[in-house]
Amino acid sequence: MRVGLMFPPGADPGEIPAVARRAEEAGFDFFCCGEHVFFHGPITNAFVGLAAAAGATERIGLLSALTILPVYPAALAAKLVATLATVSRGRFELGVGVGGEHPPEFEAVGVPLAERGRRTDEALEVLARLLAGGRVTFRGEFTTIEDQELQPVPDRRSPVWVGGRRGAAMRRAARHGDGWLPYLVTPRQFAGSLEQVRELAGEHGRRPEDVRGGVYLWSTVDTDGDRARREVVSSVSELYNQDFEGYADRYLLFGTPARVRERLAEYAVAGAESVIFAPACADHERAIDLFATEVLPGIRERGVSRV
Image 1 (cartoon, rainbow, N blue to C red):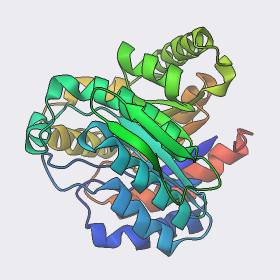
Image 2: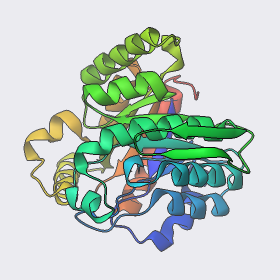
Image 3: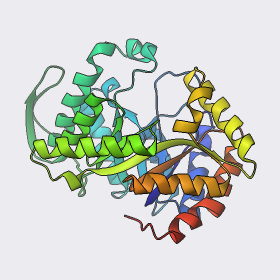
């Protein structure tokens, strides 16, 4: 099982290099940044944040979790992906979402909210063609490219992870994704959605096993399990500007190191080859250190190998 560390929303972006180095030294397999243009509080831009992380590290993988693809012109997104993949020496993986939780950010960039799914589907096609190299002509609903070549393109294609929870996201992952990355799902829901994505992938002529499973988990770990629950509920409720009290036990990862290890094992049994530990608490530095020292070793000892 690969384990990633999410840069905590609300944290100072100037700390990204230091947190990425800590993640690499602690044995995390990859480091993540999320993004929004506007949201309910401070948040990074994934491309810029991961570029800073790339310059501060040498080995750790880098994942955008998630890039809100429809707010970018498709050709510009392809250029950003190609550049980040190149400067990181092939360590970058692209996580894609359609967004929609905060409509004002779509209005601000001139993208109708109702178009975000179609724009994402088209952009994924554009990215695949441009990043494959060679001259491209493309005439779509939102993108027109006349005999242009993206240069340089990376030697290694960046894997694409598709996030979400609904049917449209599953179909998108089945067609375009190397991985399925839902959030706010139980282990049982995760297993069911991954099975659906793989069945749909087969309908597109792909091998079902080519779509890997990962899960994004808003989390905290604490020696006091009750305090961990209070912290994660408070932090995620503030982040999304809605009350998560009634959803915590199903969708959030929290508790003592032993409880967190057992919950992660449930996701592994459900088919998750990768998990993202996304700290949601006031003292995220302490949570990261406790996860690294008390949870990561336990995951490795269970015999769940890295992929």
